[in-house]
Amino acid sequence: MRVLLDTHLLLWAARDDARLSREARAWLLDPAHELLVSPVSTWEIAIKASLGRPDFTLDAAVLRRRLLDAGYLELDVTGAHAAEVAQLPLLHRDPFDRMLVAQARLEGAVLLTADDAVAAYGEPVRRV
Image 1 (cartoon, rainbow, N blue to C red):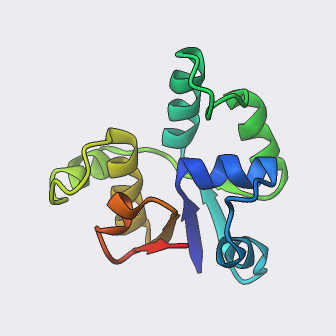
Image 2 (cartoon, rainbow, N blue to C red; image 1 turned 180 degrees about the horizontal axis):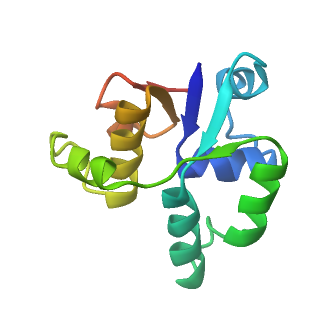
């Protein structure tokens, strides 16, 4: 199964943060899962880190390299993904999260999140 993580879960996994649930850890450790990372998350981390957000203190380039070295596959962002955002109901206004939902839908991936607003989109989003 293809598994895409939202940005906070990527950060929590990278820090081995206690907020990463047991269920999320199980998804990440399952060898049957193909773990994906989106450049959208790298972009979000870079922007929010440059704004001084305390929850985005990891260097985006370093995190990206660590994820790729750990076997994550990086998704391309395409025009089809951008167009899919227009098909989403306006349940959540964060453009990064909306793009991750669109990517998961088009790429046949489960999007794991800890965010109730993102989880409100339903399949293929799963709250963990």
